[in-house]
Every structure is written in C-alpha cells, then in structure tokens.
Length: 233
Image (cartoon, rainbow, N blue to C red; front, side, top):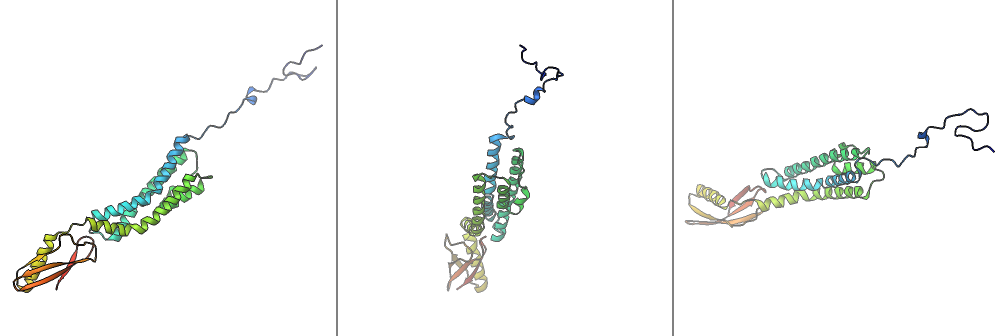
C-alpha cells in the first residue's frame, strides 16, 4: 500500500512541481490606522471649535478698538474689530486643514474662510463624510455667534466707550466761562455736574453766575469720544 504523494506530486507519472510561494498564504492583518490617531482627531476637532469662536474674537476686538481709539467712529471701530475676527478665522482654518491632511483626509480648502468662518466650517462638514456631531455643532455655534456679533457689536462698543470716557469737568467749565466772558465782558463762574451723561446726544446743564448775570449753559455731547457743544440760556 503506497503512502500519500509527496508535496508537489499529484499522482504516478506526474512531474514534480514546487509548492506555491509561502507569500501566497501569508495572512494579512488589519489595515494600519491613520497617522495621528485619536490625538490628531482631537486636535482637529479643537481647531474647529476655535474657528467657530472667531466671531466672538471679532466682537471683543471691536470693543477694545473702540475704547483704545475714541477718535474713530463706531462703524470704523466695529469694522476693524470684525476684521480681526475674520483674520483669526482664516488662520485657524489653515491650521485645521493641515491637521486633517495629517490624518489622511482630503479636507475643504482654507480659502473658504475668506468668505466667513462659518463658510469654511460648512465646507469642512460637507467634505468629511460622515462628519461627526461636533463638526455640525461647531458650525451651528459659528453661525449663531456671527449673527450675535453683527447685532451686538455697534451698541456694545458705544456703551463701553461711553462708560470709560473721561469727562474733563474743569476744562469744560473753563471753556464755557472764557467764552461767556468774551461775549458779555462779564467774568463768570461755571459749575457743571460731576458725573454727567456722556453718551452721544445726551445733554446736561451747567450753572453760570457772575455780576448781574445768572444763566444756564446747556452742554450736549456731540459724540462718544468726549466732544461737546453748548449754548447759553
């Protein structure tokens, strides 16, 4: 009784053939994970949240510019502040795109952020399929902050500028007294309130007293930077 055929033989009279290369039976393990791993994904999502907060940066910058440069109009201060937020959003978009490319993805281009931060986040969410819930949440947050910043920036900047304006009471009293004396030839003493309203359009009364003259100077704030006009009544 003959034993089993040797490896490579299929039966009597057959020519020996070498067995298939061992590589054909090599077991292939699971595909290697994307470079960066969970830490890279976390950094990319953190960058998305920072980009979503760019309108808030613009709002704060508008207030700071309005206070530091009172000579600028409210519209100019708000525009400069929102421009700072826009620039921050573009910078974060560049960083975020690099993080996503490091993860092996083909992300949306950062140039979408030149329209607005929310435009980049929208393109980012549509390009990542499926996009995580944090991506869509960051987009919703950015849209909400963009709307709130556009609405709140002008009145908030005006309010903070008015509250931080310094009223030079002595200078106003001297200016009014000098002008009254020039017009009437009567030396007078002017007394203005210590803490008058300083918002643009508000007014207050200053008492004017001198020999044979008792009057009231109505001072009106011309703008939020401390400019004023006055009339004698």
